[in-house]
Amino acid sequence: MKALLSFSILLFVCVFQAPLFPQSSSPDSTSNRGIKTWDDVDPSRKTALMNHVKERYLGKKETTYFFEGHQTIPSGENLDSSLLVNEGDLTIGGRIDGKAVVINGDVHVLSSAFVGDNIVSINGKIYNEEGSKIRGELIETVIRSSVAAQKRVRSFRVQKSFNTTKSSDEGESIEWTKNYNWPKRERTERRRNVYYMNHEYENLVNDDHVVYRYNRVDGLFLGAKFPPAHRLYSEPINLDLNGYFGYGFAGKEWRYRGNLELGLGGYGGPFLGATLYDLTDSQDEWIIPTEENSIAAALIKEDFQDYYKRQGFGFYAREEIASALELSVGYYEDDYYSLERNTNWSFFGGDKHFRYNPQIDEGLMKTYQAQIKLDTRDDKESPYSGWYLAASGMWNKSSTESAYDYDRYIVDLRRFIPLRYGENFDIRLRLGTGRGYMPLQHLFDLGGISTLRGFNYKLFSGDRLVLANVEYRFGNRSSRFRGNGLFDPFNFILFFDTGRAWFADYHDKYNQGFKQLNWSLMHSNIGIALTDDEGRIRLNIAKSIDAGPSDVVVTFRINRAF
Image (cartoon, rainbow, N blue to C red):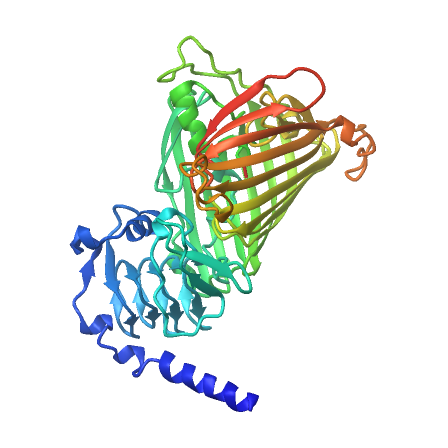
């Protein structure tokens, strides 16, 4: 009887969930209806969710084709720009020279498909057949902000990962409950290639074709960037020349980097490269991104990065071992030079002065470098779920030309855990160690923004580092606080930071020098932040809980600490 009942249910699902005709023959196919752009859509039909997705994933100015309901791009059909589908599933068999974004529906990528950028499914799933060519990432996500106040339509494919339940709270009509796993991004095995994997100089270069930044060393820096030819990487062997150059008007120096890259085996690599450069470099991108630092320097005369000149060449290799796992190795010969503070201008800040740029240990360094990175986060800038692990090493041996003999290792582990709708628990653990005399520019610094937020900036330094950051994020979307008038307008973060930077004995190996590490010597602070839905724009209020008096430290950020 149970077997008969199960068979009946299965038959019912197959009959009523499957389409009557193949998608390629559907009257909703793009080949059988007029093509409409986003600008042609009546503004009154554009919901808050549609506008939010268009701006976030497709940009305000990018030309975008728009459809509603189930759609098919059959084999042989080409779209010369990005595509947005609302309230329906998208089947791709042809070519899309841009992004494919679907709201409240699934994406089915056939083996004949070509997509020139990311594929994004909002509140749905992505099914990718082997043989398809995708030049971006596969992103599955759930919109958790208030613009998601509309129901997901039923897909023609049976879904087991989500239930949709009507919320009793007025103004919030959707709640996502988890049956198996919280939705997360599935990265394609042919991810965005060479350029998105970390070149060391990319921390001071912007994402588009124009290079711009402002700091106390270069002043206003303007330049041009020549990105790699992404679409060539579908061939078995590819040769590409890319890089950037620009001029700092206060430092009165040209800066550049050129990369000659050979791709083998198609889009996944491996990639072999040679690079030549003259850079204004920094070790502080993990503390504050260059864009945010430039805004702070130009507006309020606060420059949080420290700089030095690095000039030289190198050879490197990179490969994606798995869908979310990257490995890179390289050899570099660098001449390091100190840089001076060359400007004190900002829009505001009055008589305040920029910090002096610290001196470094100058000279030639010949280093072998390696990094392995695992990244399963659902979003790079505002993740809600996933893991991030980056482990890097630098080995420098003395020679007749270089007197430096040291090693340097960094491990950075992050975990983003969605607890329930509107609540997250996030943690970062960072460890730094080394061997030998470590040059000043490669020491580890702690204190201030993104590290120990209740202390002064870079208050602690050493050749050993231990840091832990913990955040509990909650707000007006959380069912725990629903109906509480105090929390309705806001989102909050409770955070705790603890860590220490210190010097080990000169003769200690990389795994030594930790005996003096104990809880009583750790520096700790607690704090609260007022933030937006994504946790990026935030006002932090932190206070040290170390023994002795301490001040309350207030900072404003437009990016997460980690």
